[in-house]
Image 1 (cartoon, rainbow over the protein chains, first blue to last red):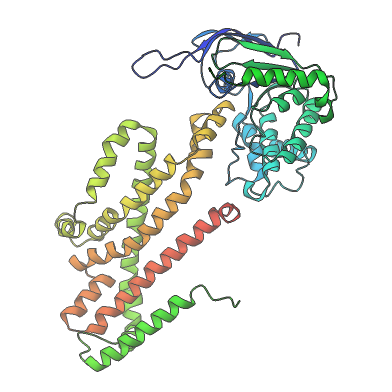
Image 2: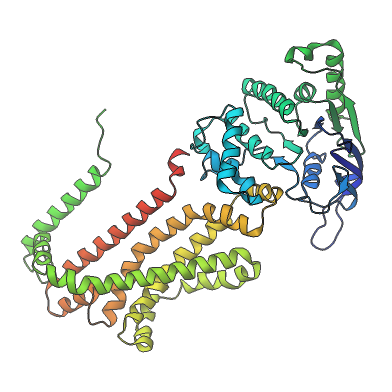
Length: 257
Length: 250
């Protein structure tokens, strides 16, 4: 348990085009360590390679150079070892909520009645009791994201990657979901990597923020100066406000005059 | 606002057309060329046992066997083309090109090959119905969400998982659309097959009545064929609605 949950050691990545022509690198010599139980946000402008980091961690892509360590061990085939929650909820419209949530358990080959029981308990904990026989089309956006998160948890891994999960929600629902997510994170004791565009969201949720820059030179790691539990009001703390302005300055593309 | 029956306007239109036909046919008064709807209905009633017991079953058998073969070949080809780029490049152009062949003109050759057996009619039905089934099943398989596929991969899904849990369910709406087109075409296929050579069947009966200048006798089996087509269409719609219940909600 002393091993970091996730570690990148000088990871580089570039897509190879069909004719083996080498494209511009997306990530060059990336280093970082994520401790067990930590909540990390990754922010950066579009195209900075945030999603690529997730594709590498999940195992959808392999690094061109460097090592990726999961719980202290290098694993070549990481598919099925990391929980991934996509930006859209990606629930299957033809499956009920229960069946949707059961998908990762089905893929793992867990017995139907055992899987059902596990999902039903979690649905209750997530405030989704009574929706198990509904279809995704019947649920609100916030509820669908909760089902999607539940499905991610059922992947059973200790590292969860959340890719802008709340970006499509309205501001009020989003705040509710952020508080809800923090509560779940405390209860479940998982390690979370969270991609977002929203600096405030990153400050509110995370222990540390990884800032990726447009020029892809380095990842800037920032510690959030807030304790836990925190409330949304803590964001108006002068130290946090200064940090927020600083981060926004870093993210804003420099317009040359 | 008063709620109208959804079929009210089309039913009214049919009644108006039938009335125009009825009066027109009576005024023209050559029933071997233009029988009136009442005459056709009367003939249908008069010949009910011959039509229903002798000629409907063989036609229905042709339709059923033809559709079954088309579904197996069509779905099989679609799955193969979806799995292999080479198969897609090999078969897809041929399947499209096959539709430019005038199948009706080709039908006599099946009589040469298969004789007056059921298989000459089944061959026509298959040729006419496998196209919509193959293309719709293929399009359906291709339409499966790529992000969802990647998500399943991150869960450790195998190719088999993705095929059965994602590709097949995603393809069903499109597949059923194709199947609905195919069932209506299958009736035409069976009738054409029977015109060319048969000892029984609704298409055969209709053609025989033509040689006897029995206008109402030509129309009566056609009415029945059309009814078979509509019944099959409704059956498919019913199966679709049961299998794809979620679509109402979405």
